[in-house]
Length: 416
Picture 1 (cartoon, rainbow, N blue to C red):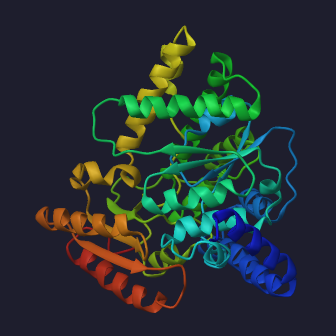
Picture 2: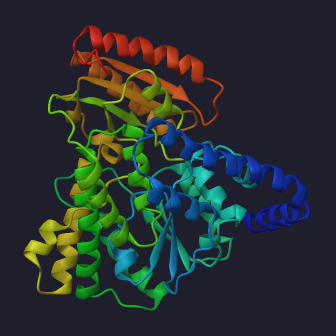
């Protein structure tokens, strides 16, 4: 019988012996990282993005050194506040890279989710300097595929904190949600050997809220959407989020003009689109669809204004408030709460649904959202694709037709 441990051990042994083959894979991997940056530069040639490009390259290729404990976070859905309040530095692994799939393919070929395979492959490859010395991992579990991956992650030798996610159907935080959040707090303190205090929570909340406000300003700026999305993702890779916030604020003040008020309300929803995966974003830009809301990228940093204004006296009261804030935030996030509500369609001028092959939950959601859009008379198109570029031309043709439909119905400005 081959256990997860022996499988991973054998795989890593093979990798170390096949160094020549691994270098070929690494070159492809490196090329996609750099080409995604080039795509942003090409679509926004007049926007000063060097600082954000440096963050991007530093995360993937740099030697990041910090005295703080590092906690790897697989995907989204984890409150970064608690990690930072525990005195640790979160290392977010989003995936989005086609070639990294090949690491996970050797370990668990039965997993179909391409985002999960890509993100976990970063851990299995062991190539990123910021991952080599991690203290532990946090893994949000919301589907069967993620649950299958957890044993393999544990066998890498690091403690793994598993957070079970649930449908956000109730008006207030459920007991299960509160319990899961508090379990995370307790486990993080064990890993970092540092207590999460009211003071450390306030400090982290202030920094994260400042970043949230900076992102809100960025969203109103009249620059290509692909540049906005890239800048936002670099927040989660930045070694210093205060410096990142200051740079974004300065960037908005000095270089940008507010976006026109008569904006369309075109939604891009569905499967995650994380850099270096720029296929859909590039095609949208090329066919003239440049004014849309992207709900497939990384989430906005949390807004803790309510917590800071209330300023609970006791730590327990603070945790109660945070539970409600985090639960409400998940409910209001289209990317996480599609299954519970379709009210976000009310003001939509159109819907582009991005569906990655292998993501079964999103396939079900695509069908349900399409029916809701048809009932509401809202133009809808579903783009089912993968991480490769083989279908780029087909996608371009479909989105050009969709753009023409939106223009003819007055739901998209003719001059874009």
